[in-house]
Length: 428
Picture 1: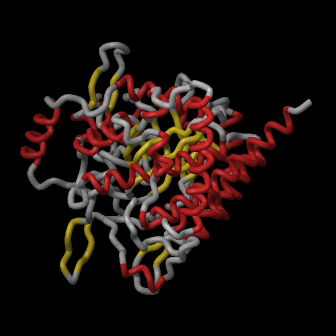
Picture 2 (picture 1 turned 90 degrees about the horizontal axis):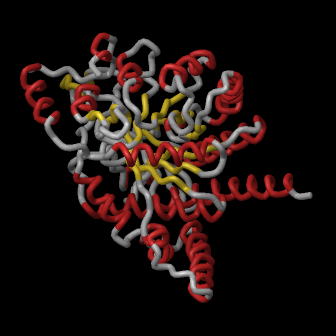
Picture 3 (picture 1 turned 60 degrees about the vertical axis):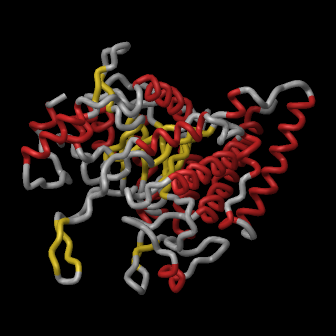
């Protein structure tokens, strides 16, 4: 597990006292795992279903988590939004939705420069607050303690989605789900079964701070494989996916399901090589390709990537990240993301997969349950002038609850059309 240290590692923070860092890492090395190998294997199985078009992956959460905003209410609200989006997608697609949070670990961030200037003072660039286990404990309680029961999810209505188009559509859908639950109860199918009262919820983050990741990597006694026990799912970013780099070398040695962030700069042949390095056995569910390139580039570049992977016979789950390719600067200087651009990239993602005969396996979004004004647009229109009123982010702009639900309905409609098209093609 130390072979990554012989490779070039980009985006690692520089510590002035190596001895203190080593002492902290040694303490962490003695800690119990935060997640368990069996959970990661279960997620890999589910992602294999998404690769075949039999499930849909919903990844969501903060761009960068912070300890300042770490409290039960914020965690609950993000969890709630993801569950609500999951209900919308499940109803539209009539397929299982795999819910993975950018949570309990998305505290480390890559930066373009080691230093930034604030008010004339040169400071080290913000690289995140790093990782937190308490979030995961709370998420486990929410997921299995009855909070995620289907009856409860359909009754939720976040204040910030009330009197919005997305909120109204959610209430309409909730009524239809309630009718279905009532029918199940009438025919003797209990709604108290764990499948109706609990949900699987996994965690993910970018594999960035390698010394930290290694400190919580453990050998699984049942499989004799190493698992990074900081999260169920890890991804390698656009800035750290070099074939000969330290991050790829580290990820090659762990058995967790992995993501590869891919922009329009990715060469198809390089992607095939990278997949081969990380998944030499071509195991279904092991690799998720997360595309982030903007709608126009998506239509031009993604087909070549899909064809190259198909020619190589590689099994992957294709996922759209419509956030990172659509960041712009508002006249005020604040970073924002236009909802229309996010929607356009999602549509391009589905269009390309329909054209190529491949499976759109999921979406990767930056969302919050808070009433923020960070992304412009949506049915409850946020304008450039509105950005400053509730612009609370430690890194990049996130969709608020209303925008998240609105996007979920757009995706659900595409899943519904895809399902209906498949059914028609199978009809005699």
